Length: 191
Ligand SMILES: C[S@@+](CC[C@H](N)C(=O)[O-])C[C@H]1O[C@@H](n2cnc3c(N)ncnc32)[C@H](O)[C@@H]1O
Image (cartoon, rainbow, N blue to C red; front, side, top):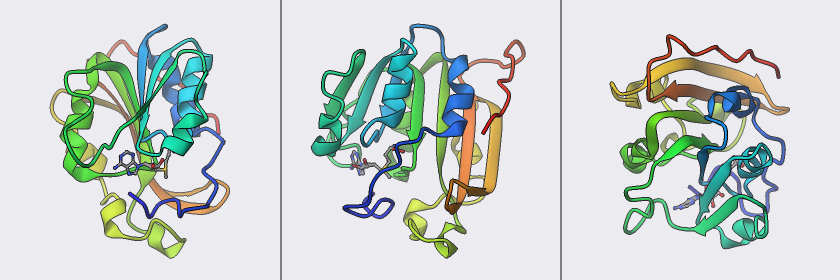
C-alpha cells in the first residue's frame, strides 16, 4: 500500500488514541503483532508496557529504527506478495493502523490467538475529500471491518466517521476479541 503515506512524508509519531484505549485488554506480558508497523510507533508503545512485540513491515529503513528496542523483534517481510510470512503464528494482540490489503485479511485475523484482541484503525471512504489515501483500494467501505470479522470474534467497540488528528480524516476502527466480552470491563475513551 504505497498511497497512504507518500514517499518522504513523515509517518505519524503520536500513537493512536484508539490503540491506547484498548491496550489494557491485552493480557499482561502477552505477545503483540504490530502489522505493517512502519517505524513502529505502536510496537514501541506496547514494548514500553512490557509486552513482547513482533513488528512486521517491508520497509527495512523504517524497521531499522527499531533495532535494539527492548522486547521488539523487527521483521522485514512482504505482507502482500509471496508466501505468507506469519504462517502458524498467533499473538495475544494484533494491531493494525493506517494499512489495508484486503486479500490477506483472513490471514491477518488468523494471527489473533484464542482470547486475543484485534485493534484495527484505518481510513475509509470519504477520506478522499481530505487527501490521501484516496483510492478505494485503500479505503474501507462503510462497516467493512465489522463485516470482515467472522463469527469467532466479539466486537467490543466500533466507530466510523470524521476525526481531527490534527488533520481531518475519515476513519473506521474496531476492537474485537476472540472470546466472549461479558466479563470484560470496557476501557474508557480519552483522546
Ligand atoms: C501508512 S504506513 C502505517 C505504518 C504504521 N502502521 C503506523 O500507523 O504508523 C503503511 C505501512 O505499510 C507498509 N506496507 C505497505 N505495503 C506492504 C507490504 N506489501 N508488506 C509489508 N508492509 C507493507 C509500509 O511500508 C508502511 O510502513
